[in-house]
Image (cartoon, rainbow, N blue to C red):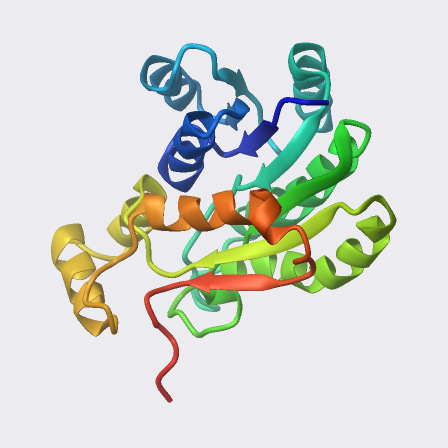
Length: 248
């Protein structure tokens, strides 16, 4: 397979969409998935017309198999798989909801794992798999224990998955954003703050770089991990947080 190809789950907005744009600009053939019909329609209007935009729920094995079938038919195979689909449901022990808990793990852990499993026949030898985890998996974020746990569970799998796929030179790495200005971040903050802009400004002031990440900050790291420049990197996590979490 001569052309570089990429499938980005959760690619219709935020970090996923920014990554799709960067990879497309670098000559990749790109497919993205999104769960909500409105985000899929918006992405189709915003992304280049040759980007394949598919509606899929990562909790559904049938949807995942359909995505792989369409990507295989369109591209023939994949050199990059960016597992970026995810949900965040802030909750504490006092406010925990069983349905929300199950949804978070179904998308962020089970969905990621089985998307990778279903993609294996399409992945070329030497392909790159990148997983969005997040700084919350290894740092304390108030009200974030369930979302952090779901990402942390997949992070724990990465060294073993990297060794499992090493005979095919398929690299498996994680990228962990700090607070990033995305629609998902704003939605999560809205659930616990009446003034999202003020909350984001306050968070930015605590960051060593004095700002929140933009989706492009994360996307450029993903593009690096997808490239030949990262051909000898596997089983690793890269934090892209502007230094957040470094202070004791």
